[in-house]
Image 1 (cartoon, rainbow, N blue to C red):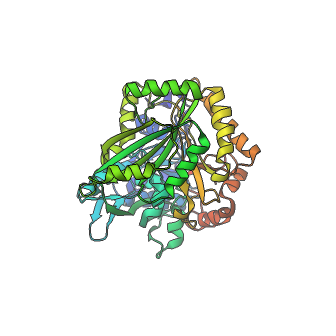
Image 2 (image 1 turned 45 degrees about the horizontal axis):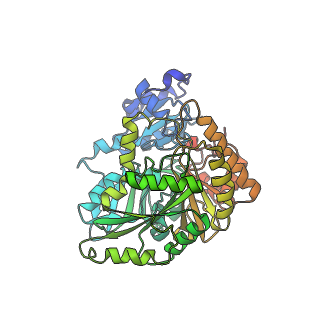
Image 3 (image 1 turned 90 degrees about the vertical axis):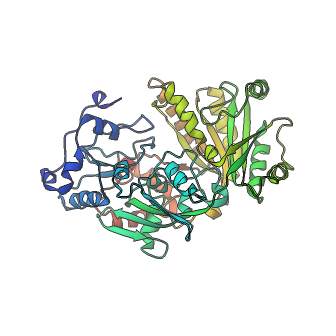
Length: 501
């Protein structure tokens, strides 16, 4: 559904000279194109661009950015992948949104993914979806090591943030598994970069929120792909025991994936991301929820293939030794590797069939220092979320290890060896999403009062001071890189870092 009718259309602010460019024929001004570029998964922020570019090659993007640089008053440019941001980060008010998915249709060989079996890497277009990367690499028995929970995101999009999931404690975020990039800078320069070549741009772009350049190719590390997984879920009623077992598991060998989530007594025992329990299991869990109010689910996964199939059950038992989950409340599923990685897609299809996908999603994603995670549980999960009983949507909490993050990159994380990813994945309605957003603000205010030095993932701030606090010691480097690679501040205005609202 187009949102244009609900907004005041912006005045076209592009200079008339743009009509003389070769790229002019690939700019769209119609309501369908503008409407798509004016909304995102969050369904909260709406900014109308002057035009949308549907490129057929990266030369089109270069021409557009170079032209903007030549204008006395440059216009903004934002790259849009699958539009899964939640606060308008991929929008460009009065500027041009680049529909990166348009590139997928114009490869001469029909594929923007090239796999090197000798080098164990894949060269992948920034516009490619991770699900397509998975399918292409599996044809060679290979796969990337690090994933996001949802695979229908573009490579350029996740690498501009960080990209992490339950594998991250072991393999690092997706930005730690990149060998090389092709980037169009904010000056319109096309540059290949890596740790050894144009390294300043390489480190700037990875986790750089699209502020320094548009990723058009990434060389992704691959490894031998497993065939199946043993997926185990264990239930806890004590948060301190739950986190202690999580931290124990990420310190042991043999585990490939670990995440955690919360169950509340006022919500169903399953959610759209993972319908794990059978009806009989659900009745048991509901009884337990009535007793405790909140339960904590620890999910761990062991990969296997034909060679290790006979030993995988024993390996799982060894991983469970010494864990203190509630006796009798452990559940296991055996799935293909692809079905496990693509598990969120099933929930998406279900929600879309009920008309519940394209709703406001005031998500809040936080990185919380390990030293404060018990205080966070008491102050946020128990005293705000459970007490107010507003939240509808998955609540995730699991540990990450700092050693697998490269501090030279733009992404910022808490300054502790272990920190927790907390995902409050709210879904609301167009009438009540503000209540959930107010709760998010209450959570942020609590953390500030309690001295919990959180970092926002997929950050959203409204002032320069808040951004300076977010980046901390990296702020000066961040500014210097902006001046070097996008001096006229053309790229990614929706981040509101250098284009303050």
